[in-house]
Image (cartoon, rainbow, N blue to C red; front, side):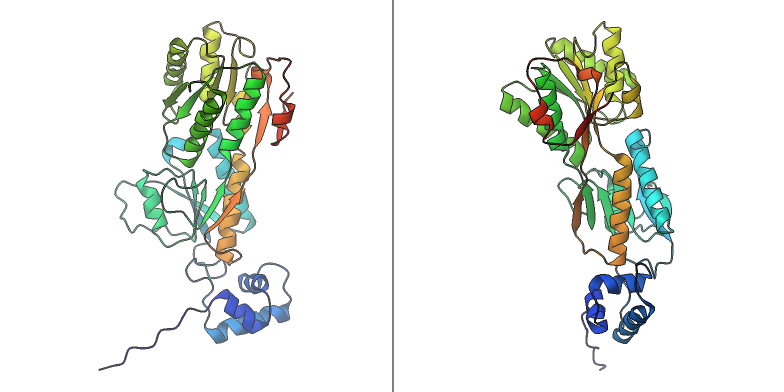
Length: 354
C-alpha cells in the first residue's frame, strides 16, 4: 500500500520575507511588482519565494499571478437608481483603473448555481442585505470579498468599509432639536441592512433619551414618488404635531418636499426636513435640504483599495476600516431659536452649504 505523502503548512508571505531578510510589506511589493523596491531586493525576494515554493497569495489570486485583470462589483438592481450608489460605482472603477484593472458588473441570476464563481480576482459588495441569496453565493466563492457596510447578523467578508451612521443620525436629530423640533419623525427603509438598522436604532435611542414617542414609518428602498408621498401624508395625519421629517433613503426627502409644498407647508419654518443621504437634488431643492453626506465615491474607492490591499497581502483578513461622514446644514432646517447647537455639531465634521 502506498504511503500517504506528508502534508506541510503552506508557505506564507511572512516566510518569504524572513528568508529574504526584508519586511512583509517589502516582500509583498516585490512579488506584486509595485512600490519602491530595488532590483537587488526584488531578485532576493523572488529567489526566496521560488526556493520555498511560495504561490503568491494563492487563496486570493494576487495581483501578480491573477489571470483575469478584473474585479467584480455586485449591485442589486434596486440600487441602480440611487445617486449614492452610482457615485460608489465610479469610485470603484476609478480606483481599479489606477491598478490597471477592469471592473466586471455582477448581476443576480435566479438560476445561478450555489457554487457560482465569477471570473474575477476579487469582489466588492454594496450595502449587503441579509436575505439576498447572491451574497451567500459570492461569499462562498473563495475569492476575497470587500463590502461597503457589514452584513447584518451573518458571515462577514474579508474586508469591510463602514461608516458610523448611528452617530451621524444622532447628530442630525440633535441639530433638529436645537432648531426647535420636539417631535421629529423618520421615514425609514425596509431593507435588512446594517445602514438601515443603524439609522432606525439611533432614532429610537434618541427618542427614548429625550422622552418622546418614536414616529417611524417604513417604505421600500427605491419606492416611487407617489408611495413616498402617501407614506409622509399618512404619518402627518396620524401625528399632526410632527415638526420635522427625516427621509432615510436616497430620494425620500425630495419626494416629501413636493408633498409638503403641495399641502401648503413651508419647509424650514412650518416644518423642518432632512435626509440621511445627500444628493444633487437636495442641494438644488427650494429650499436646499439638510443631509448627511454618505460619500459614495469615497466609499467606492476605499472598498476597491482595501480589496487590492488584500490581494497584495498588505493586510490580513478579516479587516475593517471606518469612513467618516459629514453633515451638510441647509435652509430646510434653518429655524433658529436662542438655543445654540454649536457644541453638538462641533463633535462631528459638518459644514454649512451656502
